[in-house]
Image (cartoon, rainbow, N blue to C red; front, top):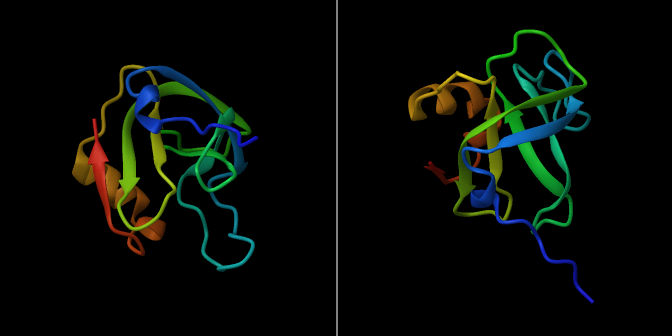
Length: 116
């Protein structure tokens, strides 16, 4: 039996807990770049790629282990089955341009749309 995956859109404008497995300032284990933002996953939310649903945490300037905030947007990759949540501190908003700038270190390699 296949495990159903989470629809990333269901997280929009909701509080989300993100487990950070690649904190700000850490090196990617295979590609050698440094993470300029905290990056992790939503525990218990399976994604189509077989892993947990990924999330960028924006607006936090220190490395963290876990973060709770609001899902401000979803980066929906149109050429890959791996959506990314954009999670921000309560009361914070990020424009599409700010999201693109903050996540371009990885997302430049994919085609995507930002969903609100």
